[in-house]
Amino acid sequence: MLDPQLIQRFAELILKEMRGELTEPEARELQEWQAADPQHAAFYERMHSVPELQARLLKFGEPDEDAAWQRFAQKHFPAPAETETVKVRRMHYRWWAAAAVTIAAAAAVWLWKPEPGQPKGNAPVAERPKTIMPATSKAVLTLADGSVIPLDSAGSQTFAQQGTTASQNGGSLVYQAGQPMGELQYNMLRTPRGGQFRISLPDGSQVWLNAASSLRFPVAFGNHERKVELTGEAYFDVRPDAAKPFKVAVAGEAEVAVLGTEFNINAYTDEPAIRATLVKGSVAVTAAGATRKLEPGQQAAISGGAPVIELRPDIEEALAWRNAVFYFNNSDVRAVMRQLQRWYDVEVEYRGTVPNRRFDGEIQRNLPLQDVLEGLRVSGLSFTIEGSKIIIQPL
Picture 1 (cartoon, rainbow, N blue to C red):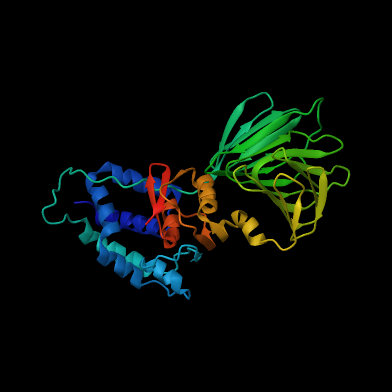
Picture 2 (picture 1 turned 180 degrees about the vertical axis):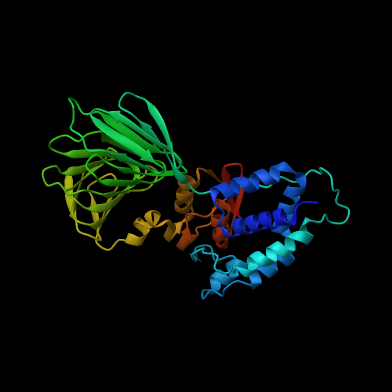
């Protein structure tokens, strides 16, 4: 008989997984525990499938003022009209109260017992889809000499080049100020899908790099300008220096020039436009031979021509990734899935005719993929996970 304290421990981990609160080490612990014994895997299955337990856990939830969210929690959403906009509440799982942990622990004892007729030995257990966790701090740094250095959230290392020093501490990379020695030498920081990273450039400017993005920069800036190259998405907090304007070459199509400011650039190649959003300060955006100046709260959109200024853009949408949420503002299914592809490092396959659904609202970015998809099922779509692929089809 397994130690009751161990049963309680893994019951609590399974409950945290349901809530979307499971940390990476806990997820690994839970996966290793399931793999160690078929009875463990069977227990995991029963914790997820017993209606009585689910009902008791949900009973202790705090009420939510949004009726749609109540229906989501109870999984009784009616299919919306073909072009209806779907409202998605913040997925904080507030309806899971602390008392639920006690219930889960108590239920664990009788859940552990085999069902009548169930063999107690090494009976085969149906395999559950692997939990797909959100992005973590990871990137690849390519040095001027071609050397490739993997970076992750646990790393700590220091290296020198062209008269300057760079140090990694967890999910951040810091370059010390230095003087250029001869021709400028460049490094490239690249995040994969499912990764993000922060870098402090040689002048002290800070850059947060979103998933599936890259930043090319000199290890020491020259005497007249500070210029970097971006693909994907990044948030910049630029150190003021009137003698050295800071310039961002964007995906080979545009340039953003600043002195000192904070702004976001979204330049993914699979998005319909490049968007530069100014938070504070001033920037000049140049594309197709035309230059437009932005004021705080404005956004420039570039789609194969001169920049188009949007005077009242949705700033919350543009900066959502920096605030650790997915933000949907009348977003269609494909726009939503492009974000999930990058953040969770998955592929997406569409089967059949995808309904013209639109999404409004926010979902936390720290949730497992399965929980995010659960919040999107209100759209009348079926989401199936096969390995690292999401299959989407009408219900």
